Length: 239
Ligand SMILES: NC(=O)c1ccc[n+]([C@@H]2O[C@H](COP(=O)([O-])OP(=O)(O)OC[C@H]3O[C@@H](n4cnc5c(N)ncnc54)[C@H](OP(=O)(O)O)[C@@H]3O)[C@@H](O)[C@H]2O)c1
Image (cartoon, rainbow, N blue to C red; front, side, top):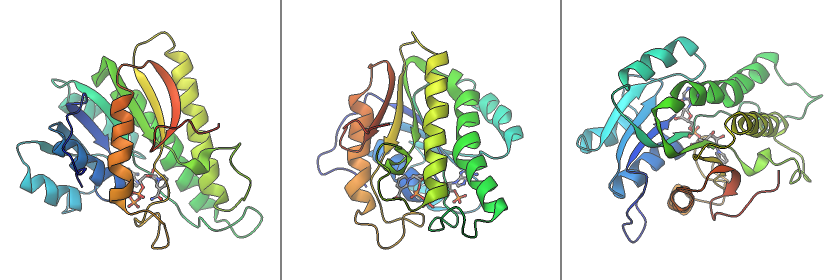
């Protein structure tokens, strides 16, 4: 998944959470192509695209296990990684269940809870548990979505998914407020609508249309403190 011209990265040590497949796995490949050492996490110990890629690049990739909805897994992961420091923590994990439904239609309670638990609480718990592994001038990023923009919601649709990403944005801003004055770059990222299992076959972008640009955007913000909500081109997304 590397860009046409191999680029160096300031994020030479990266921890990518939710990297078994799709966009997260592509972020791992992109960082490895830029010379980084990467730890990627997957929920399953079984073979995933991340495991298969790591087997070809054992010099650059370690795979760890983590389900962000199982908080008891966070502390052991932090302990396993205690001797390491990262320039970048990027939490990519996310789900979309019954995404096309509208509130008032037949949203299943369990689907609603599972989406909020994964996309909001799980992501933020991972940030809180793992942030001490990130260098003081490093970057903490989470995968939001353009659908998380309240200002940009003029068309509706994907109502629960949108709500989870808007809630994630709000929680991440609270995190940023609590860490005001620190030097880290804090990024909420919108990759565009991409063909993955979550994005579906009708999405206009291929993974390779999005991820190299998204990684360029992360790298360009290295050393810029404070919270930003950016698309893959590095443009600010309206809250
Ligand atoms: N594709 C798009 O158009 C698009 C647009 C905007 C934002 N996003 C966001 O980008 C992120 C990745 O999406 P994707 O398109 O790559 O979807 P995907 O192909 O369905 O991959 C989702 C990833 O999240 C992981 N995950 C799900 N639940 C998890 C949990 N409880 N703990 C840890 N990992 C978990 C999955 O792991 P398993 O393999 O174990 O299920 C998988 O690696 C999501 O946050 C999504 O909301 C996607």
